[in-house]
Amino acid sequence: MESELRNLDSATLKTLYDKHLQELSDALLSGAEWKDVQDKRKLLIELSKLLHTSTSGTSNPAETATRY
Image (cartoon, rainbow, N blue to C red):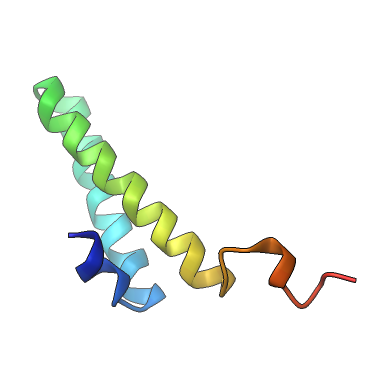
């Protein structure tokens, strides 16, 4: 799944993140099984990492333009 997510642009990743965050919140409030909640959390973590990487442009801080 991660490979499919890597090909998405940041706007789509943000939309997916917001959707799955709401699903996690709903699952927690409804008392869902821990396994279901855990799976949703793992997906959110993956989306968060990809979103951070796509918005920062690089995963290496030493390569940013603000470095002097």
